Length: 524
Image (cartoon, rainbow, N blue to C red):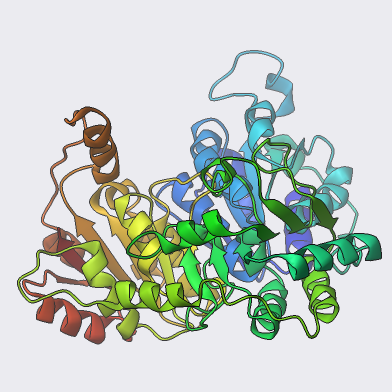
């Protein structure tokens, strides 16, 4: 067979359903090999969109999302989405084409050192220089991408290698490599510290919503009664209906989440990455007792220097810790905060209040089922969603907060609608929306149906607000926009521009549960 056929057979052996990407001359053999396979190749409108789709697919399914691009600008356009997957701990495998090896030793058309370019933003990186190495290369790329902590890997596939004839077969896939159970000494120390604390608190991070960790965390929280705050990416690890939930670190009328962690004397950090939220903000005096539970040791940082590190399977650790804490009840030191947080985020706006993201979220929450998925873009609206959108299930509020890249939402909506049976909503600002709005065409071509909510203020609002806070003025942030309702209709989807809060409520109640694509513009 052709080497490109073998690579596709290896993808099939890994269970790949979709490949998101753009065609290119150097990908010709690989594309026709995909055509003969059971894998669906989804042409996107930009390589960044393809990478974001693979990124969100990986976060929602736990299986590596695949993005494909040709050499040169195709590969360089992938990098933002690949880097986002790496910092957000999302399993992703990027495949890029390359010119024939006979011209790579010299300057030639569109030729860049793609492997070197990807090196800083992936877990592993390789050029397939010999067809015989395809089975090992593909298996390694998937194994490392999906191994905790997950992330991105990259394979470069030169066109002359793709055209070679090869006789080989994919390597058998195996069960994922599992971390060991926690060691007893560390577990005993952790249980003693939590039991002795006067104000213990769980900090749920990105790792708490992966694998069965969320279920085990809920069991622990319900048994012990220990309060929980989450990072933006840990939303949904514990249901915001539980009395123990204080939502995120910045939630509440007086930032109750931050207040609680400032008052806490013992923090049980579960799957927490310091890239999500700087521990300097909640441990400024470096005086808190910290128990670190994660698949990897803690980063070395003076404001996050754990007393105990349990480097093991998170789910198994939480299971065993719950057994160790049998009969222990956490002090009721911040029960009053939950009600204040819920009241704050549930408050509907008055009829004459100006439109705001915060005012929209109670109506959006009411229109969505518990298992429906909200994909947030990056901007001032992301902060509001992170702090005020009540989340009841893991992986139902997807926020980019490691790299925090604008433009992820619409491509993310495509991936989410392919990955889950629930309804999908995309929340984005006008800045991030137009970065990858062309992927609406990809969505309509695929016959997908999700809701896009665009918050418009004709400005890069988060940046201008920070400039005003720092200097009293803003510069370089103002924008102009098309008529978004007409823009939506040009793609053949319905566009809405509510004029009152009552219109907002009724419009969301109509379109969110529906099966058709729709765009709702909320003018702030």
